[in-house]
Length: 112
Length: 116
Image (cartoon, rainbow over all chains, first blue to last red; front, side):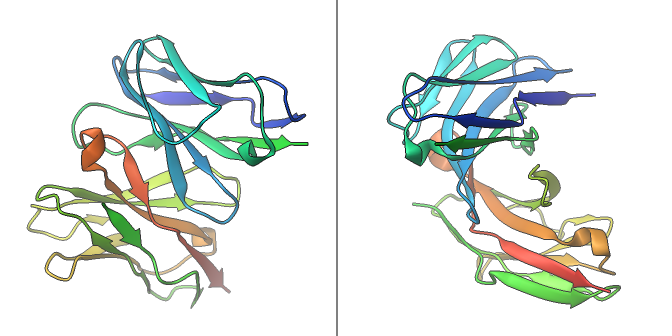
């Protein structure tokens, strides 16, 4: 069966520090991969999605980036974190077609 | 642009009773899919149920069913025989056509509290 791993679960970082969140999927190949962010008490906002290695589509983030160096690995990065980057970050995957997305357990990021 | 609206920020229900969580949507897409997710306090998003726009039958999955009214653009989630473990945030979502129907647009969610 397929599983998704996301780490770390919790992260506290100072403003201006770099960020790297990692997500890996097991048990499937060539999945669609997604990064979402959730502000407290709100719905999820799409940050990036990827349909294949090296193929990244970006939404709104200005100082966040994503990379997909391997088929089942998706990385969210920043060179310099802002206070506004605080939130709950969720990675998700889906197979091709109109199938549901399945989410990792999330990373709670606090910026001090 | 697509929009998902969940008008109930919070709902209470007695254990063992049924509850309906409302979701309305707006899309110009002819073919679309609607999803419901549950988010417990621990944070993970759990897929509950899916309804395709061309599905003739309302989707059901155990105690979850989806009351799909296409003309009214509503896709309400019905939870029968509520349990204490059903207390969580519930999100309605639909695929975004501008992402090739890959990514999801989410509503703002409904917090359900099941009371003993």
